[in-house]
Length: 315
Picture (cartoon, rainbow, N blue to C red):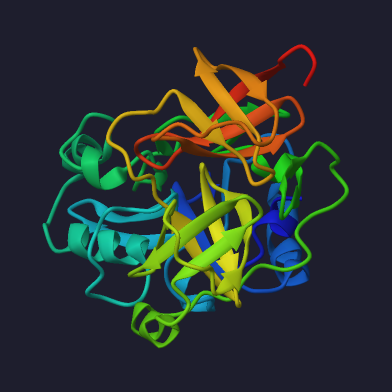
């Protein structure tokens, strides 16, 4: 199920008790190839870290699967990452590769690396709500950073793979997933799509600038139709085979949210009041994606925050 939801390649580390080292293998682009290698280590007692990649930045290729090596005084550490880093890419095509490359140039020891990566550390703003798992030399327990969940006795960086995914939200069925994932192109190639500026998704419109989508409430006529999909902890606009992260246009969370069906919601302590279609829209609204009794709303940092929906009487 993790592979179905994140099928852009995989890699893993397993702790070898005899040699007291981590064994790393990566570059798996087919599930069968991955399973043949990892299945012997899925039994109880194994210490195993597996990463299933879904691209938000960079190319889909074996080289960009996780983990990435970080050179330390004590040896080599292996970095796994879930999320998108606020970092300029100068090496390769992956933000995680870029981070590992830069950290390798510093000549750090294990303690210093932990201090840099930990929550509240010097890289907290770069981390941007990401989760890290780091396999360190001579340490059999992975070093975890960020908010992790537990599913079936496993620690997971998120549980979206538990849900079937559709282009209108998260389905609670575990048997259906996205029929495909959009092709992501290099930033240089986004310039070729500048004629597609205003994208419509039902009652919502977005303006695409520099590879990012922003809510748009102007009068310009839309030039393309798209879909909204959830991925990681955010919402993404997909159209014409491209994927764009939806960024909010406000510094503080508004009191209202709007979904693609045109339904307006009043935000109130993680509970919502739903209003009928056609109501007067406030000046500032957040973008939301409805999934049953939950609305995923973009906060001021572009994370999708779940709100419980309470229907207004008569709506």
